[in-house]
Length: 545
Image (cartoon, rainbow, N blue to C red):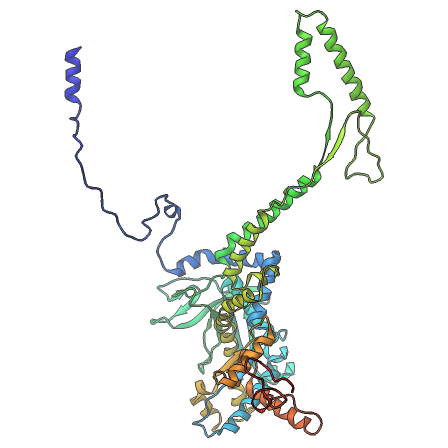
């Protein structure tokens, strides 16, 4: 035995003597604090954004449209985004540089007014601006915004109707636009041939054509459509937020990051409603003096007991009593939620208890609101606009929320609907000057030679909402008086053209002359304590005006 133990010890590795070792130095690195492995459980890879978009875009497009069609929250949010971005229309403010073409300031202003009036007439007549003759430009922009919310991009194709078809349909212009759903531009990709995401690029990455699926006489056909007309004007209008998906030829729905939250919110609401309905359906119980299962088991043991005389007879007598009670209950009824005319009966000794529902609990509303805040943040609208719940909003919080969201609204306007309508405007103005319907010094050749200078324009949407318009007006007044603001900037913030408005004011002043005092202009005079009857120090307005 000793020999065996000695041999076994020889086979075992020699015990290591522990030595004091200095601890490993602490490392300062990114994500070095994830001791629990939370981040390591998230699957993420590094690659071009366009690959992620190509894999997820079809499912994302379908989910986004499904939410916009079947979720009241998201349908309302989409409407709110559209009215914030476009309002009734994007109003044209022509800003051509005609200084080198022989125009003085008055001639330039008159020419701009003519162009804006003609554009308004064109854009509000579906027969003139839409190839199918169904939608105005504003309605087309609404559609572009909905496609952007669902797919992260919008497409339109410009066509030119020849003289024969113009006479046939009774229209005077040939420039027509058609909306194309993003799913009708398949993500055809063959980098060897130059196709990437359904878009054909040349050797330096410039867009040359689009792969479009069109329905012609009931037959689906796929064909490539040139990106531009022969004269260089844009033919395919493709708008997207390229800053959100850098280096990607296609976009993806801006709702994609919050799809999970939207679905969870709906699921929470459905589960809470189901629980509340179940609690309501079973909100009544009957407290009965009848024996429990343990009592029946005790009677069974009493019946089987042989050491007690008469125990079996006693147990049988008690069971007979309960049998009589059960037979009596068979002839009585208890109805809750059934026939309203039925009279309810209870058995002897029974009590009916009504229970209140315990769902939703106190934690439901805060949790649901937190998810709604995440959705609102992702969509670029305020929580109050998403939920129409202003119960916790104050004047200051409303101002801060609008101040935070409004730059997102104006950025979205400049990225999506404005470039789309600008493409239509350029083609239309090219036709109007080319056909002589809008005069231009130097003719069409001078226009084409100075194309970028002439077509420059701004597209103004609705004004920024104010929690207190009176305070905002006072702020504008102070800025004007202190020279820190201009009429042009103030009117532009309201979505108005300052020259049009001041011209209208001049007409009103002339019209009211000799009738009543004109309401326009800075108020002076009165019986105030300050100079010239103005307000005293610390007062906003004169004492009497």
